[in-house]
Image 1: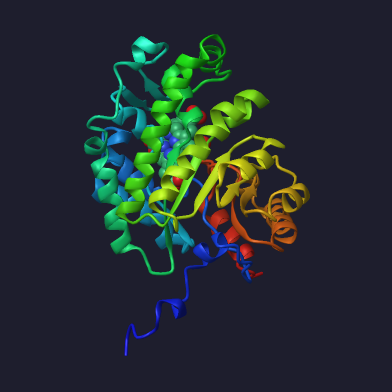
Image 2: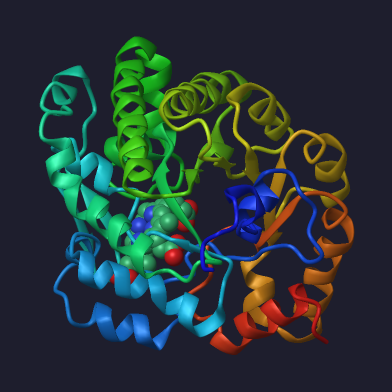
Length: 352
Ligand code: 1CP
Protein backbone atom coordinates (compact mmCIF):
# COMPACT_ATOMS: atom_id res chain seq x y z
CA UNK A 1 0.00 0.00 0.00
CA UNK A 2 1.61 3.26 -1.01
CA UNK A 3 1.48 6.17 1.39
CA UNK A 4 0.28 4.08 4.30
CA UNK A 5 3.11 5.19 6.59
CA UNK A 6 2.21 7.74 9.22
CA UNK A 7 4.01 11.04 8.64
CA UNK A 8 6.42 10.41 11.49
CA UNK A 9 7.80 7.33 9.69
CA UNK A 10 8.45 8.98 6.36
CA UNK A 11 12.19 9.70 6.34
CA UNK A 12 12.70 13.42 6.29
CA UNK A 13 15.00 14.99 3.75
CA UNK A 14 18.63 14.91 5.01
CA UNK A 15 18.87 18.68 4.60
CA UNK A 16 15.88 19.24 6.91
CA UNK A 17 17.18 16.70 9.43
CA UNK A 18 20.51 18.55 9.67
CA UNK A 19 18.62 21.80 10.18
CA UNK A 20 16.66 20.10 12.96
CA UNK A 21 19.97 19.54 14.77
CA UNK A 22 20.75 15.97 13.71
CA UNK A 23 24.27 14.87 12.99
CA UNK A 24 24.13 12.62 9.91
CA UNK A 25 26.59 9.99 8.62
CA UNK A 26 27.70 12.50 6.05
CA UNK A 27 26.46 16.06 5.97
CA UNK A 28 24.03 17.27 3.31
CA UNK A 29 25.62 19.55 0.71
CA UNK A 30 24.62 22.42 -1.56
CA UNK A 31 26.68 25.40 -2.76
CA UNK A 32 25.89 29.08 -2.78
CA UNK A 33 25.43 30.18 -6.40
CA UNK A 34 25.24 26.53 -7.49
CA UNK A 35 23.21 27.70 -10.48
CA UNK A 36 25.27 30.12 -12.48
CA UNK A 37 27.93 30.96 -14.97
CA UNK A 38 30.36 28.11 -14.17
CA UNK A 39 27.79 25.74 -15.75
CA UNK A 40 27.65 25.60 -19.56
CA UNK A 41 23.95 24.72 -19.41
CA UNK A 42 23.31 27.93 -17.43
CA UNK A 43 25.23 30.04 -19.95
CA UNK A 44 23.12 28.52 -22.74
CA UNK A 45 19.85 29.63 -21.08
CA UNK A 46 21.31 33.00 -20.03
CA UNK A 47 22.18 33.63 -23.68
CA UNK A 48 18.52 33.31 -24.66
CA UNK A 49 17.28 36.26 -22.57
CA UNK A 50 18.22 39.88 -22.98
CA UNK A 51 18.41 40.80 -19.32
CA UNK A 52 19.23 38.98 -16.11
CA UNK A 53 16.03 40.16 -14.38
CA UNK A 54 14.04 38.65 -17.25
CA UNK A 55 15.56 35.29 -16.30
CA UNK A 56 14.50 35.81 -12.66
CA UNK A 57 10.95 36.77 -13.69
CA UNK A 58 10.31 33.96 -16.21
CA UNK A 59 9.21 30.95 -14.12
CA UNK A 60 9.85 28.41 -16.86
CA UNK A 61 13.50 29.51 -17.22
CA UNK A 62 14.07 30.15 -13.52
CA UNK A 63 12.82 26.60 -12.76
CA UNK A 64 15.12 25.18 -15.41
CA UNK A 65 18.28 26.89 -14.10
CA UNK A 66 17.38 25.99 -10.50
CA UNK A 67 17.16 22.31 -11.52
CA UNK A 68 20.36 22.24 -13.61
CA UNK A 69 22.80 21.73 -10.70
CA UNK A 70 20.38 19.24 -9.07
CA UNK A 71 20.35 17.07 -12.20
CA UNK A 72 24.08 17.33 -12.74
CA UNK A 73 25.23 16.75 -9.15
CA UNK A 74 22.32 15.55 -6.98
CA UNK A 75 22.74 18.26 -4.32
CA UNK A 76 20.63 17.87 -1.16
CA UNK A 77 19.00 21.26 -1.62
CA UNK A 78 17.94 23.48 -4.51
CA UNK A 79 17.96 27.25 -4.11
CA UNK A 80 15.28 29.21 -5.90
CA UNK A 81 16.86 31.00 -8.86
CA UNK A 82 16.32 34.72 -8.41
CA UNK A 83 18.39 37.60 -7.04
CA UNK A 84 18.36 39.62 -3.84
CA UNK A 85 17.80 42.82 -5.87
CA UNK A 86 14.26 41.86 -6.94
CA UNK A 87 13.15 43.37 -3.60
CA UNK A 88 14.29 46.97 -4.29
CA UNK A 89 12.93 46.50 -7.80
CA UNK A 90 9.55 45.43 -6.40
CA UNK A 91 9.60 48.44 -4.04
CA UNK A 92 9.71 50.72 -7.08
CA UNK A 93 13.43 51.39 -7.56
CA UNK A 94 14.95 51.14 -11.05
CA UNK A 95 17.35 48.14 -11.15
CA UNK A 96 19.41 47.04 -14.16
CA UNK A 97 22.11 44.42 -14.59
CA UNK A 98 24.76 45.54 -17.02
CA UNK A 99 26.89 42.93 -18.75
CA UNK A 100 30.16 42.47 -16.88
CA UNK A 101 29.51 45.47 -14.62
CA UNK A 102 27.13 44.16 -12.01
CA UNK A 103 23.92 45.79 -10.83
CA UNK A 104 22.98 49.46 -11.32
CA UNK A 105 20.22 51.15 -9.33
CA UNK A 106 18.90 54.72 -9.33
CA UNK A 107 20.22 55.56 -5.86
CA UNK A 108 18.09 56.55 -2.87
CA UNK A 109 20.09 58.85 -0.61
CA UNK A 110 17.59 60.65 1.58
CA UNK A 111 14.10 60.51 3.04
CA UNK A 112 12.67 62.32 0.00
CA UNK A 113 13.98 59.50 -2.22
CA UNK A 114 12.54 56.95 0.16
CA UNK A 115 9.06 58.44 -0.24
CA UNK A 116 9.03 57.30 -3.87
CA UNK A 117 9.28 53.66 -2.77
CA UNK A 118 6.72 51.45 -1.09
CA UNK A 119 5.12 48.06 -0.71
CA UNK A 120 1.95 48.68 -2.75
CA UNK A 121 2.05 46.38 -5.76
CA UNK A 122 5.14 44.62 -4.44
CA UNK A 123 3.67 41.12 -4.42
CA UNK A 124 2.27 41.60 -7.95
CA UNK A 125 5.77 42.34 -9.21
CA UNK A 126 7.13 39.37 -7.31
CA UNK A 127 4.36 37.01 -8.45
CA UNK A 128 6.61 35.26 -11.02
CA UNK A 129 9.05 34.39 -8.22
CA UNK A 130 6.24 32.81 -6.18
CA UNK A 131 5.14 30.92 -9.29
CA UNK A 132 8.71 29.61 -9.72
CA UNK A 133 8.61 28.30 -6.14
CA UNK A 134 5.26 26.54 -6.73
CA UNK A 135 6.57 24.87 -9.89
CA UNK A 136 9.79 23.78 -8.17
CA UNK A 137 7.80 22.10 -5.39
CA UNK A 138 6.20 19.92 -8.07
CA UNK A 139 9.39 19.20 -9.99
CA UNK A 140 12.05 18.54 -7.37
CA UNK A 141 12.99 14.97 -6.43
CA UNK A 142 11.46 14.13 -3.04
CA UNK A 143 14.84 13.89 -1.27
CA UNK A 144 15.83 17.45 -2.25
CA UNK A 145 14.80 20.42 -0.09
CA UNK A 146 13.83 23.78 -1.59
CA UNK A 147 15.48 26.93 -0.22
CA UNK A 148 13.90 30.35 -0.68
CA UNK A 149 15.95 33.44 0.10
CA UNK A 150 16.25 37.19 0.39
CA UNK A 151 18.99 39.72 0.99
CA UNK A 152 19.16 41.07 4.54
CA UNK A 153 18.15 44.72 4.97
CA UNK A 154 21.69 46.09 5.44
CA UNK A 155 23.01 44.39 2.28
CA UNK A 156 19.96 45.44 0.27
CA UNK A 157 20.28 49.01 1.60
CA UNK A 158 23.91 49.18 0.43
CA UNK A 159 22.83 48.55 -3.17
CA UNK A 160 19.86 50.93 -2.85
CA UNK A 161 21.97 53.79 -1.48
CA UNK A 162 25.24 53.26 -3.35
CA UNK A 163 23.44 52.56 -6.63
CA UNK A 164 25.33 49.29 -7.16
CA UNK A 165 28.25 47.35 -5.75
CA UNK A 166 30.62 49.32 -3.55
CA UNK A 167 34.13 49.14 -2.14
CA UNK A 168 33.77 51.16 1.03
CA UNK A 169 29.98 51.52 1.54
CA UNK A 170 30.67 55.16 2.51
CA UNK A 171 27.33 56.51 1.30
CA UNK A 172 25.21 53.91 3.08
CA UNK A 173 27.25 53.96 6.31
CA UNK A 174 27.50 57.76 6.13
CA UNK A 175 23.72 58.13 5.95
CA UNK A 176 23.46 55.80 8.99
CA UNK A 177 25.85 57.99 11.00
CA UNK A 178 24.57 61.40 9.85
CA UNK A 179 20.86 60.65 10.04
CA UNK A 180 20.30 57.33 11.74
CA UNK A 181 16.55 57.93 11.93
CA UNK A 182 16.22 58.51 8.19
CA UNK A 183 18.46 55.57 7.32
CA UNK A 184 16.51 53.55 9.90
CA UNK A 185 13.35 54.25 7.89
CA UNK A 186 14.98 52.71 4.82
CA UNK A 187 16.05 49.67 6.90
CA UNK A 188 12.51 49.42 8.34
CA UNK A 189 10.93 49.47 4.88
CA UNK A 190 13.27 46.75 3.61
CA UNK A 191 12.78 44.73 6.82
CA UNK A 192 9.02 44.77 6.45
CA UNK A 193 9.17 44.00 2.72
CA UNK A 194 11.66 41.17 3.25
CA UNK A 195 9.57 39.51 5.94
CA UNK A 196 6.49 39.68 3.69
CA UNK A 197 8.48 38.37 0.72
CA UNK A 198 9.87 35.40 2.67
CA UNK A 199 6.42 34.56 4.08
CA UNK A 200 5.06 34.43 0.52
CA UNK A 201 7.91 32.15 -0.57
CA UNK A 202 7.10 29.81 2.33
CA UNK A 203 3.36 30.02 1.47
CA UNK A 204 4.32 28.91 -2.06
CA UNK A 205 6.26 25.92 -0.72
CA UNK A 206 9.82 26.99 0.14
CA UNK A 207 10.90 24.61 2.95
CA UNK A 208 13.89 26.60 4.23
CA UNK A 209 14.75 30.31 3.98
CA UNK A 210 18.18 31.92 3.85
CA UNK A 211 18.90 35.55 4.65
CA UNK A 212 22.04 36.80 2.86
CA UNK A 213 23.83 39.64 4.66
CA UNK A 214 26.80 39.63 2.28
CA UNK A 215 28.19 42.98 3.45
CA UNK A 216 27.65 42.60 7.21
CA UNK A 217 31.42 42.39 7.66
CA UNK A 218 32.02 46.12 7.11
CA UNK A 219 29.92 47.15 10.11
CA UNK A 220 31.32 48.21 13.48
CA UNK A 221 29.81 46.63 16.59
CA UNK A 222 27.14 49.29 17.11
CA UNK A 223 26.19 49.35 13.45
CA UNK A 224 26.13 45.55 13.34
CA UNK A 225 23.68 45.41 16.24
CA UNK A 226 21.44 48.04 14.74
CA UNK A 227 21.57 47.27 11.00
CA UNK A 228 22.26 43.51 10.95
CA UNK A 229 21.08 41.82 14.18
CA UNK A 230 17.94 43.86 14.91
CA UNK A 231 16.41 43.63 11.40
CA UNK A 232 17.25 39.90 11.15
CA UNK A 233 15.59 39.30 14.53
CA UNK A 234 12.44 41.12 13.35
CA UNK A 235 12.34 39.14 10.11
CA UNK A 236 12.81 35.81 11.92
CA UNK A 237 10.04 36.70 14.37
CA UNK A 238 7.60 37.72 11.63
CA UNK A 239 8.30 34.66 9.48
CA UNK A 240 8.11 32.27 12.45
CA UNK A 241 4.75 33.72 13.46
CA UNK A 242 3.35 32.47 10.14
CA UNK A 243 5.63 29.51 9.45
CA UNK A 244 6.98 28.21 12.76
CA UNK A 245 8.34 25.03 11.11
CA UNK A 246 10.31 26.66 8.31
CA UNK A 247 13.99 26.80 9.36
CA UNK A 248 15.88 30.03 8.70
CA UNK A 249 19.59 30.19 7.87
CA UNK A 250 21.36 33.50 8.54
CA UNK A 251 24.52 34.49 6.66
CA UNK A 252 26.14 37.60 8.18
CA UNK A 253 29.22 37.28 6.00
CA UNK A 254 32.41 38.59 7.58
CA UNK A 255 30.86 39.10 11.03
CA UNK A 256 33.90 37.65 12.88
CA UNK A 257 33.26 37.15 16.58
CA UNK A 258 29.94 38.97 16.14
CA UNK A 259 28.64 35.69 14.69
CA UNK A 260 28.12 34.71 18.32
CA UNK A 261 25.78 37.61 19.11
CA UNK A 262 24.03 37.13 15.77
CA UNK A 263 23.26 33.50 16.62
CA UNK A 264 22.21 34.30 20.18
CA UNK A 265 20.01 37.27 19.33
CA UNK A 266 18.33 36.72 15.95
CA UNK A 267 16.60 33.36 16.49
CA UNK A 268 18.00 31.78 13.30
CA UNK A 269 18.05 27.97 13.17
CA UNK A 270 21.38 27.78 11.36
CA UNK A 271 24.24 30.06 10.52
CA UNK A 272 26.27 30.10 7.33
CA UNK A 273 29.96 30.81 7.94
CA UNK A 274 32.33 32.63 5.62
CA UNK A 275 35.74 31.06 5.07
CA UNK A 276 37.58 33.30 7.53
CA UNK A 277 35.78 31.83 10.57
CA UNK A 278 38.12 29.47 12.51
CA UNK A 279 36.61 25.99 12.60
CA UNK A 280 37.43 25.07 16.21
CA UNK A 281 35.98 28.35 17.43
CA UNK A 282 32.80 27.78 15.41
CA UNK A 283 32.44 24.25 16.79
CA UNK A 284 32.74 25.59 20.35
CA UNK A 285 30.98 28.92 20.21
CA UNK A 286 28.25 28.34 17.63
CA UNK A 287 27.54 24.69 16.90
CA UNK A 288 26.18 23.96 20.39
CA UNK A 289 23.37 26.43 19.64
CA UNK A 290 22.64 26.06 15.92
CA UNK A 291 23.38 24.02 12.82
CA UNK A 292 26.49 25.24 11.00
CA UNK A 293 26.62 25.73 7.24
CA UNK A 294 29.90 26.22 5.45
CA UNK A 295 32.58 27.14 4.92
CA UNK A 296 34.99 25.95 2.21
CA UNK A 297 36.80 28.82 0.51
CA UNK A 298 35.46 29.20 -3.07
CA UNK A 299 39.08 29.64 -4.23
CA UNK A 300 39.96 26.26 -2.72
CA UNK A 301 37.20 24.71 -4.84
CA UNK A 302 38.51 26.59 -7.87
CA UNK A 303 42.04 25.26 -7.17
CA UNK A 304 41.03 21.60 -6.77
CA UNK A 305 43.51 18.75 -6.25
CA UNK A 306 45.06 18.19 -2.82
CA UNK A 307 44.16 21.73 -1.75
CA UNK A 308 40.50 20.80 -2.19
CA UNK A 309 40.87 17.36 -0.56
CA UNK A 310 42.57 18.82 2.52
CA UNK A 311 40.30 21.84 2.84
CA UNK A 312 37.11 19.79 2.63
CA UNK A 313 38.37 17.07 4.99
CA UNK A 314 39.34 19.58 7.66
CA UNK A 315 35.82 20.98 7.72
CA UNK A 316 34.37 17.46 7.91
CA UNK A 317 36.76 16.55 10.75
CA UNK A 318 36.15 19.62 12.88
CA UNK A 319 32.52 20.48 12.18
CA UNK A 320 31.29 16.99 11.25
CA UNK A 321 30.95 16.07 14.92
CA UNK A 322 27.86 18.26 15.22
CA UNK A 323 24.97 19.34 12.97
CA UNK A 324 26.51 20.48 9.67
CA UNK A 325 25.45 21.44 6.17
CA UNK A 326 28.45 21.45 3.85
CA UNK A 327 28.72 24.58 1.72
CA UNK A 328 31.16 27.22 0.56
CA UNK A 329 32.02 30.34 2.55
CA UNK A 330 30.62 32.46 -0.30
CA UNK A 331 29.32 31.98 -3.84
CA UNK A 332 31.03 29.66 -6.30
CA UNK A 333 33.52 31.45 -8.58
CA UNK A 334 32.50 31.43 -12.23
CA UNK A 335 35.84 30.00 -13.46
CA UNK A 336 35.40 26.88 -11.26
CA UNK A 337 35.77 23.68 -13.32
CA UNK A 338 32.50 21.70 -13.00
CA UNK A 339 34.57 18.53 -12.26
CA UNK A 340 35.85 20.10 -9.04
CA UNK A 341 32.27 20.35 -7.80
CA UNK A 342 31.70 16.66 -8.63
CA UNK A 343 34.88 15.75 -6.71
CA UNK A 344 33.85 17.82 -3.69
CA UNK A 345 30.55 15.95 -3.49
CA UNK A 346 32.39 12.62 -3.56
CA UNK A 347 34.65 13.74 -0.71
CA UNK A 348 31.74 14.95 1.39
CA UNK A 349 29.74 11.79 0.76
CA UNK A 350 32.69 9.68 1.81
CA UNK A 351 33.74 8.19 -1.51
CA UNK A 352 37.49 8.18 -1.98
O1 1CP B 1 24.17 37.32 -15.82
C1 1CP B 1 24.31 36.63 -14.81
O2 1CP B 1 24.35 35.38 -14.91
C2 1CP B 1 24.47 37.37 -13.51
C3 1CP B 1 25.11 36.61 -12.38
C4 1CP B 1 24.14 36.45 -11.23
C5 1CP B 1 23.55 35.24 -10.78
C6 1CP B 1 23.77 33.86 -11.33
C7 1CP B 1 23.61 37.47 -10.41
C8 1CP B 1 23.88 38.91 -10.55
N1 1CP B 1 22.73 36.91 -9.50
C9 1CP B 1 22.67 35.57 -9.67
C10 1CP B 1 21.79 34.61 -8.95
C11 1CP B 1 21.74 34.66 -7.49
N2 1CP B 1 22.11 35.73 -6.71
C12 1CP B 1 21.26 33.63 -6.63
C13 1CP B 1 20.57 32.32 -7.06
C14 1CP B 1 21.50 31.32 -7.66
C15 1CP B 1 22.17 30.35 -6.76
O3 1CP B 1 22.59 30.65 -5.63
O4 1CP B 1 22.32 29.21 -7.24
C16 1CP B 1 21.42 34.08 -5.31
C17 1CP B 1 21.11 33.33 -4.04
C18 1CP B 1 21.95 35.41 -5.39
C19 1CP B 1 22.19 36.25 -4.22
C20 1CP B 1 22.91 37.54 -4.36
N3 1CP B 1 22.86 38.46 -5.37
C21 1CP B 1 23.75 38.06 -3.34
C22 1CP B 1 23.96 37.41 -1.99
C23 1CP B 1 24.96 36.32 -2.05
C24 1CP B 1 26.38 36.74 -2.36
O5 1CP B 1 26.90 36.22 -3.36
O6 1CP B 1 26.93 37.56 -1.62
C25 1CP B 1 24.22 39.31 -3.77
C26 1CP B 1 25.17 40.24 -3.02
C27 1CP B 1 23.66 39.56 -5.06
C28 1CP B 1 23.83 40.78 -5.90
C29 1CP B 1 24.31 40.50 -7.27
N4 1CP B 1 23.62 39.75 -8.18
C30 1CP B 1 24.32 39.63 -9.35
C31 1CP B 1 25.53 40.37 -9.17
C32 1CP B 1 26.62 40.51 -10.22
C33 1CP B 1 25.51 40.92 -7.89
C34 1CP B 1 26.54 41.85 -7.26
C35 1CP B 1 27.56 41.19 -6.43
C36 1CP B 1 28.53 42.23 -5.86
O7 1CP B 1 28.14 43.36 -5.53
O8 1CP B 1 29.70 41.87 -5.75
